[in-house]
Length: 137
Image 1 (tube, rainbow, N blue to C red):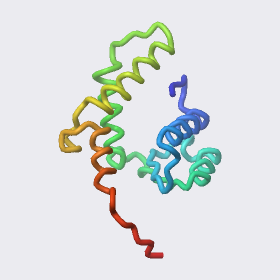
Image 2 (cartoon, one colour; image 1 turned 30 degrees about the horizontal axis):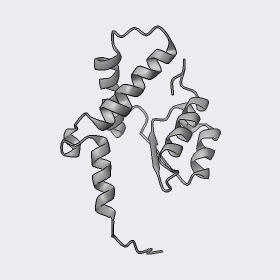
Image 3 (cartoon, helix red, strand yellow; image 1 turned 90 degrees about the vertical axis):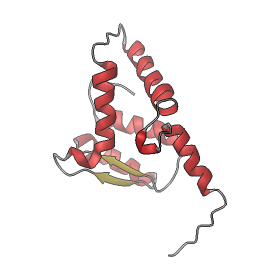
């Protein structure tokens, strides 16, 4: 999702897209900064409806969200900086290819034991197969 500005509609649309793509998982923690779009009634209601937990970084503390800050630093500084797109559609296609194809499936990450995010996620879920979860409540 792209827009001329970050507003509550954009974050709600992006959240709905992500949830649909992941099969509407429950007990998801959604971490963000304290931007007004993330504090909006609409977004908070959406989180509640989807059984998601909201987590916000402390005001002015980028270290609380270091992984996301690092991702966008790389995206803006090394990938998008200097690029010229003729249309929004062209920019969207470029960003989709970079994030969904290269970053998530190909690029290896030291924090993931040099696996791509997709391979790391697959390995994680495979490690859960056969585990029995006991409800302690």
